[in-house]
Image (cartoon, rainbow, N blue to C red; front, side, top):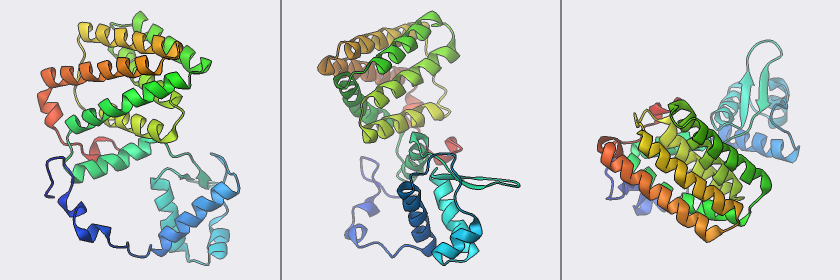
Length: 263
């Protein structure tokens, strides 16, 4: 078990040794970096095939095992996918927030980070996302938020619809922020909370409370009011955290683990 400080940070990450220069990358890592650079330089898009294995071995002057290890690194990171069968092979993919969530979950597992910490961080990030979403207001985002609110309102008693629209609403706000880092981090935290078997259920009153604050956030974004949007989202996060603390204290103390996600 790793020794951690009060914030769940591994103490070995705070020692002088942690700041020593990293070891030279393995050959397979170098190849993975070159292939990723080549994808960007050539302007390849998701679904575009890479060169054949033989051609890549020749162009990078490496053996087949080293190349395959490099491709496997890229596959795990979501940069490529390797299609099986005749005519298959590596094709370009698109890394997304779910891949970041998987990596974060692995780090959290080894630092014994609890879901309470995830919810606490989300309480800081989401108001920023809402503020930027309102500041960068665009009609497409507003219409999508309105649709999500309407769908939740129409099927407030349907748990599957509620959970889907709850997740979708926060993704829309994060994407509307117009800042890729905030979008990735916010959506990854949402995946960590949504993708794990938390066993959290919302009462009808709780669902209606969520709906009401979603409506408020939607109105502030539509009106282009960053401060009001941030305050509405801050209220939403505070109410959600209080609900989890009251109804599911054991979940809040649970450590995030990588295997919960199957990513």
